[in-house]
Image 1 (cartoon, rainbow, N blue to C red):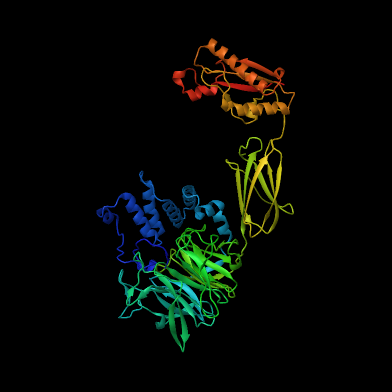
Image 2: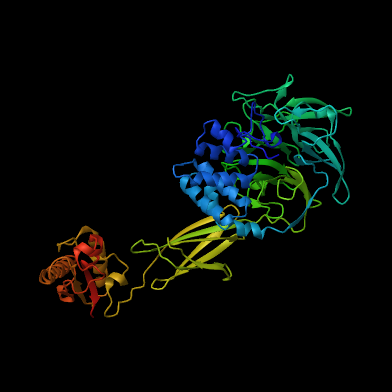
Length: 632
């Protein structure tokens, strides 16, 4: 059961919804919504959401595609995100990444987009961590939803909405399907499950029960249940029956003292309990006030007398604007959780991070085959045996959600992938430099990776770094080599560098136009004018600086016109432009003896513009120019 902690959309399958909704008739068809008077935009949004909240991502993507195809549609940025996630279910990661870039542009302060942009090679790193486990589908699965495994003594407890075959059944009135109840299976020596039976009548109610966590001695269970009482679901202000965590105690062979935890509330959900190895902290998922996204992970301290401290949000390093849910704590202090906000393969992916590194440590995607393009969640792990279990609605399953076992054959490397970003500019102009060569070397001089800057002068490199010092060397033809040192450690996973390369001062050979040599804007003139415009000031200042650097250089200023007037007039005008250009350079400190001005009229056009009638003014303007040719 993939759970949405917030005000979820209407769902077609009660066992797939987290919060119980009154009067939730399914959005069954396009025609039905047309009859109700919805517009195409509303229809495509609602049908997309209907499938998305049921984790039917391929179907959701088909409706979102129709939504974005509408000319008058201006959907909320969240639909861009959902469409990007839906594309992953079809394995279309390239298109998904393009929509994630659009999402980041439309909502620049959203950490999901920021995480994607900071790690554009996330698929490479997921692949690097894939193939470390073997996964098996379990024979205890039913055609209903089987999920939320937890260890209990020598068995595995899980939640299921399976039909028990009893004559008298508690069923959900919305779909006439059984409520989710707790079951237990014996774990055999080879890790298989056998003898599946109801876990305990003592924890049953006329509501859904799911995710459990047990104290080390097995005498104190924590479990999730719909808010229920007096024979009915209790509902908050918005009409939703939320989820709450309850605690019980085993006394004389029976579960007694079943109590709601004090930080639960009718107005929000608290679910999916997980205990630390020493039993002093309880972790859970919630959409309580202060939550960053659809659901966040929290922890509370458990005192010796069994009382609880205030809930503490695990923070922005863990939680996103999406869903973080189904926490589990291994005996070695690793927090496993499911998320659709961190970069992954699609839907909910399973991640891991050390409890000591929650604020800035490595968040590791477990990779395939544990993760897939669908929802993968509810993992539990026995670090001693390297065996675990999780749930997924991936293709090939028997029911809506199925249980899987896995055996870890290669260790989980909690090694950060560090990100180095570099922006390379020309020191004099500030212009981003394309194709500047970048090398990163370790302290021993071994080249770890090389590459080059893109069209915007940027370079991104993500790889595994050990803690220590690294060297970044940048080279480009015509510029001095630049070397930088940076440090990387697990608390500093991103290094941002900006470099300004110094041009190598070499005199241009005779015949060179300094406009091209210095990579500066052309000096153009307005129609029928010889006045130096403000837009030419910066270029002329660069030419003056060059001539001061190389005091023996002499240049010939060749000025031109367009073909708008007659040849005689154009020749006269070009000479005036050459004179004005020379005088301007002299006014900036260049000796007049180093300058020669010549006018060429319309005889050296750069394009086809022979008359004004045949050519727009912006094309004519290209011909109205001065050139600066090195003659000595």
